[in-house]
Image (cartoon, rainbow, N blue to C red; front, top):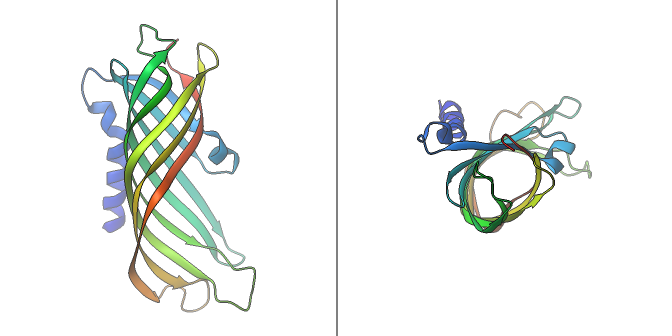
Length: 201
């Protein structure tokens, strides 16, 4: 039930802009290039909601399970941010904004990560849990052509994690050693170099 609830929240975060009102118009689809090149599927969309204001939503899925050492690297993360474009460039009638932007963001996801240590004399562990984050995002969208842009951005804020700790592999791999551990962090929480395809010219 907990997993269903988290997946539902992530889906709502991503789909909410689609149903938020008639004033919301799809502007572009995008992918975070470094994550795509490292084999982590991701997709994003940006909607125009008014003069110099857009809503951006991203979803990332890391699907990896390595049977050799029972290693796992899985995560599902969704984020939504509101962007205000300051002195935008290349404005067209379809509310296509470029240039510098800033605004708040919210992010949530869950993870199941366990990688074997290089030093085999030390015990390896797996951590499974969820996290939330909020803060400020800023970036710059570079004009390439009427259809394509490059969006470079960075998010800084507060992140909170809760997780259970397991031994990686072995007969006790499914029995938690520690439960509901928490960690908090303030600093950079997300970054991206997105290739954008504009739905409208």
